[in-house]
Length: 125
Length: 105
Image (tube, rainbow over all chains, first blue to last red; front, side, top):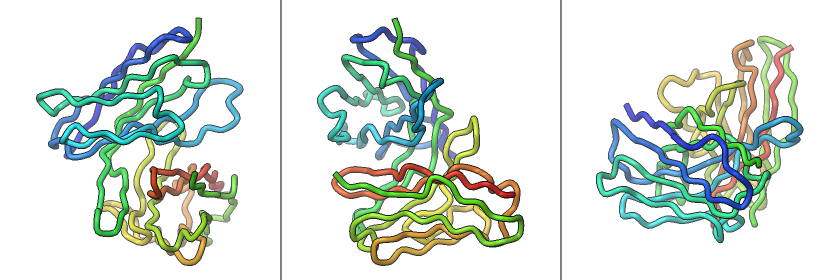
C-alpha cells in the first residue's frame, strides 16, 4: 500500500522560497500531485487547491494561477518529488498535501486515491 | 478557468438521505471524483469516475453526473459521515469545488 510523507520548513518569510518534499513508499512514481488547503485564523475559505502534477517521466503540469511561481521535480531514485514555490506571501499559508494522482487517459479523468498527512506552512516575518 | 460550485452546507437527520451537488458548465461531459475530509485529517476519496467506490467505502455512498450537475448521495446517513465533502474534475487543469459541510443533526 502506498504511503506518502510530506516534509518542509514549517515557517517561511515573505518573498522567500518554499521548498517541500514528498517521500513515496510502496509505489513507483507514475503521477503525483501537490494540493494545498489554506489554514490559519481568519481564513474564510479552507477549500482544496491543486498546485500541480509530476509524472514519472519528470514532466510536470501546473495550476495556471500558480505556474509562474511553482516548479516540481523528481529525484533520480523516483521515491521522492519536490515542490518549489517562489516569492511566497501570507496567501500561501496552508497545509500542503502530496497525493497519488491516478489518471485514466481514455476518459480524461483523474482522482487522488492516496494522500499524505499534510505539512503546515506558515508565511510570516 | 473552469469552476465547480457546491453549496456551503447541507444538513441531514440520521438515517435519512443526504445529497450534495456540484455544478459546472457541461459537467456531465466530464468525470467527477468526491472526497470526504474530517477535521484534522487528510481528504479521503469516496467516489471516482462519477459512480465508482474505492475499496473500503460503504455502499451507502453513491453518485451521479448529468447535464451540469454531479451529485453525491449518502443513503442512511450516519453520524460518522459528518464531514466536509469536495468534488473534483479535470478540465484543462484539475479543479476542486469549494466544499460542502455536511451536518448530521
